[in-house]
Image (cartoon, rainbow, N blue to C red):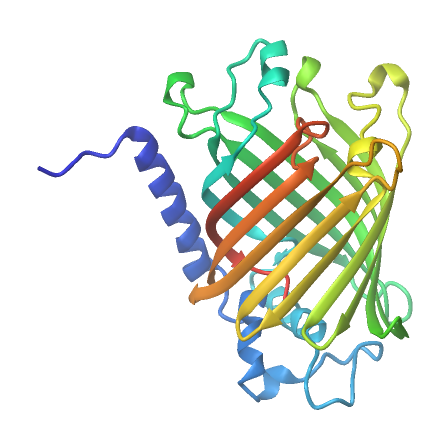
Length: 323
């Protein structure tokens, strides 16, 4: 006899199906998710955009140029909103050490080891070529959620959601540094909060710059930031820099459709040295969908866990990768 699915299983299957439908129907075939096809298809879409700072005389278009060109095509279509960071759903993640103490102190149910994690991220061009053909102003929004779907006893609550609006200006550049070709410079203002109250409330504001360089199919990004100070009585996480540091290093490498990525953070302190590493692997499976595996180890995966050590691995799908 066929076993009936639980309500929780039906919810995650419906959510997963909706995510896949968005990938197949809503996102155009020319989206950045399919940039890897440009390695083998030599046609007019290979041509770099006409911005002087990013044109090149090389036969092969760089991975950053591919991303810029594909984003421009999506932006010029009726779907004017383009992806910003990764968009993914991990239906199954496992955390070896959930943050039980914080939730016990807040008189809430203890989180279980298994949960769903998903991220939605997009950006909208507000002002093109602000400074004589260079400098694009964007608004971006990223939302990352951790969902205790498999905790039936507590009615499958959303454990944590981080909301991250930001505004930034992107400049096209073209100079070499340490053997890498710096292609983009970004300066922005970022707010991040979890929308909670009481002792679970978390928020902070940052000014950041981002240097994005490449070499072949390798992309490296260095993103230092400065936290805007708050009044002591309004500061939900006064020592967050001790755990998340003052910036992060990101990298991604593309090889025959595979994309390997990493993110590193460190507080650069000799005493009480803390940081985080996130590793990712993705591979195209159908249309705009990529299978995705993510591993996180360290501090600050979410705002409520900024001072809690997390060791998590998850498997799912994404709509596009960085390159």
